[in-house]
Image (cartoon, rainbow, N blue to C red):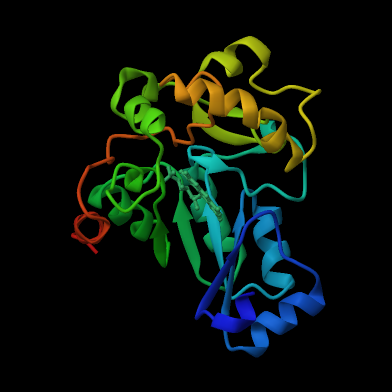
Length: 228
Ligand SMILES: Cc1cc2nc3c(=O)[nH]c(=O)nc-3n(C[C@H](O)[C@H](O)[C@H](O)COP(=O)(O)O)c2cc1C
């Protein structure tokens, strides 16, 4: 599918695909990025052909890019991980996790990042397909409490704590393997959202939602880059 578009950048999560697939991506001239959650993962990505590495700190919303270990206790905060990755690899390092404003971007650059990757702050932008229950949760005090959970997809991801996370986990050994948990939870999620409830929905968010603004993504990007 990507071969039809030949994008300038292809960014992976959960490591990298097989060497043959990666060679195909490279043959189009695409730059290859992937997330590292530890120094070991950053070194592995560099050795296996990444052009730049995203240092994804524990604060980040959504899925952990963790791929060399299953132990989420091994995960490191952004501003502890970033300078160690910068020191360990020769390729550019992009900082991710908890960065929500121009100050956070500038701090990441001061620690050696070549760029910053921001996810959570964009979730209220009109362009985002964030669901109604997710938007409401992001705007509420509930958004201050996020946890890593495997209940919604089978892999650990950070989201706003809701009923199913409280009652089953948030990390459960009986969650179906990735990505099967998504369809297992689907009917419950759909029925619940029809009633306006996010009790069974993944509501991905990082530990810092203070940057979420209901403004166009381009304007938010300009604000984030104001001190670069
Ligand atoms: C709703 C949501 C969906 C995400 N989906 C992906 C994804 O598909 N692929 C990916 O590499 N990272 C994904 N991420 C993770 C981000 O790339 C990034 O690591 C993270 O958002 C940075 O931390 P922050 O959320 O605190 O800004 C997602 C994050 C969020 C919040």
